[in-house]
Image (cartoon, rainbow, N blue to C red):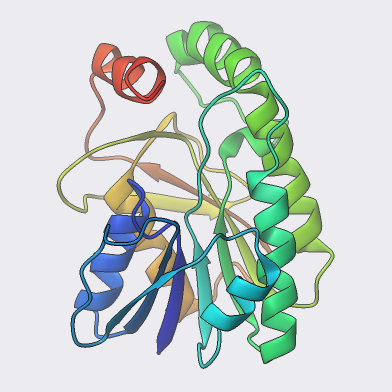
Length: 230
C-alpha cells in the first residue's frame, strides 16, 4: 500500500513513517522541512505545507491512504493547524478518489473522558495543561474532527491520551470513542494506526489508544511536552 504520512518529521510521525516502511508499505513522507528526512527506496519525501491545497493535492497523487500525525504547540492565540490541514487533505483526497484517512486527535475531544484512578491527572494535569494551556489547540482539534466527520471518506479519528516518548512498541489497548487510560506512548500510537489501517475496526468513528505496559515519568513528561517545546 502507498501511504501518505503528514507530519512525518514530528515526534509521532517519525515512528509512523519508520513502522510503515518496516511493514513493507510505500511511504510518501510529507513535511514542511526540506532535508529533515532522508529518501530511500520505497520512501519518498515530499515538501509541502499541509494547509496548502495545491501542494497537498500534488503530494497525494498515486496514494492509497492518508495518515495524519500533524501537531501544534500550545498557544494562547487561535490555532488553525488541525482544521486547515483537514480541509486541504480531505479536499485533495476527494479529488484523487482516496478514501482511507486516519487522523490523530486527542482523548480530550471526548467531553466525557476521565481515566479511572488517575487522580493526579484528572485533578491537576488535565485541568491545568489540557483544559487551560491547551484550550485553543484542543478547540481546533474538535473543529478538525467535525470537518472530517462531515466527509464521505472512510475515516478514523485516532485519540491518544497524554503522549510520551518511548523507544519501542509496547502493550497497548484501543477502544471506540476513547480509551480508559491517561497516557499513550508514541510508538504505540503509530502501531495502532497501522493496525487499524489493515483491520478497519473503527471506520467512521473515533479510536482511543492507551499504553498499558509502561508509564511515563510525570516530571519528565511535563518538561518535554510543556516546557522544553516552548
